[in-house]
Image (cartoon, rainbow, N blue to C red; front, side, top):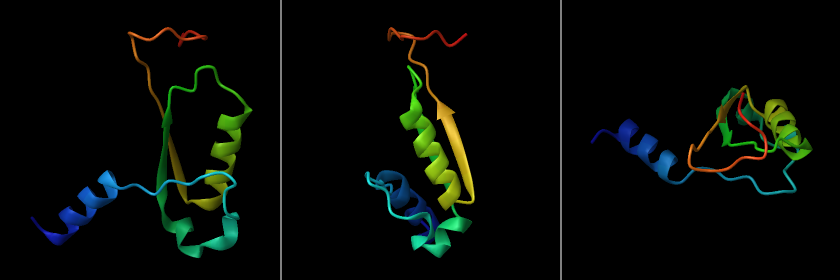
Length: 80
């Protein structure tokens, strides 16, 4: 396995997890070059989800939001 491939596997298996209270957006300059993924069901959606998105968008270059849906789970809000 090549070194870049090993790095990607490591980053996938051991992601960086930010815990609240979040560090200031300007605390790490190299973050502005990174892309992050924010995944969840967001059901029901609330202001905490918006606060996370606002923080991540101020800290990172690109934020990809993934909305998951589990057909065997009962949700408070329908996806339609």
